Length: 246
Image (cartoon, rainbow, N blue to C red; front, side):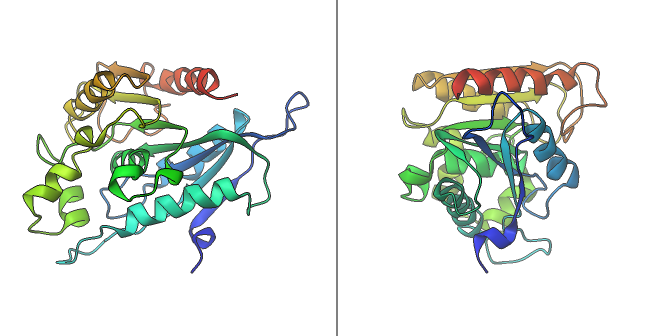
């Protein structure tokens, strides 16, 4: 099947003042590499479209059953192909050059960070997005790891070298794109140390980033509209994307 068969396209809302090429965002829902959380999928795409950007939701390969076979490299290969497809214009939407981003939640945030470092992880520098938004992402598979994501992506008995390789703070280079991160300090599913470690790696490589840590809230809040504090992440993110794109 073509990669387009796994992508839902939500075009930007038409605005009288902005009818030309615009930003495009690849959306990667979370789900522990076992599924795709609905509240982190099309509803997110419609928020992005309302801000004036094209959104593309990718149903990347997952493993809902416990399996001895690792998922890797299938999710990263799909994300790489999706970025290339968005840039190709095959979908028929006007996308601005140098303005294709990726946005991922939880395990989808891990995949977003993988494709952000695709030059080293997949030998695909042409598929690195122009910016990244990581929402309570899985980052480390060594320090406070998310066991389910690690097991499904790398198999039940991963090699130490693979655990290090897919602990993505170790993959950050000066070529990693500008990144917006948010997390809650109370996240018990994927501890805030994941975002903090990635931010530290970005700082060490002088990659522009913005990090927001909200004091309360469980894992998996999505757009966060149910929380009076966390819900502000979307407006903060919109402002950040506008500063880093058109």
